Length: 224
Image (cartoon, rainbow, N blue to C red):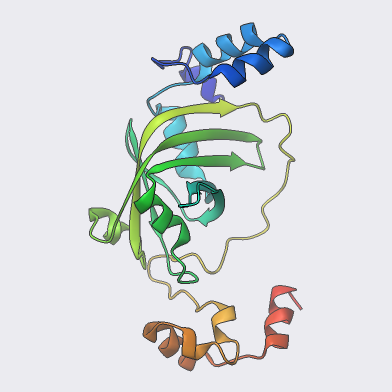
């Protein structure tokens, strides 16, 4: 898919570069190239080609900012919905109970996302402002979602796929919620001694699934 084919011109009003970017560009004689790329690929609206690519991804990487100003990156499984030319949304599913990324987004709305295709190397960088809600209308569209995150686009651009290794998908994740299918409880929650720490609903599910030892969990992780 040639995303650039539908985006011959960018539409960004302010430069993405600061003095440090410029110093490095001048050091390596790349200012002309950087300026050209900014005008060509950096934009503030989601095109039809962008929408098709983003919604086709089964996972993405999400960067949020903690209170100590330390950026943190998380893998997020599940499909993203493109709401309009400026907005995307995705679900937050049952996890480890830390709510680290969603908590960060409630404190610091600025986020970065990376959508990447390893089979036909391609990627999009997506920057924006996030909001988190448990009352979003999209809750019904995502079975088992605990929260919905909406992100308003500030800037996005396509990155060169040159260094992306080409890899082949082997299977879907059996743990990703799907309509009409009960999602299995996380195996690590079934480890003996964990049940007292779990939320009540997870305790009930562990009781149904049965407990396992730490050794059995290690074997599951290793695929033995």
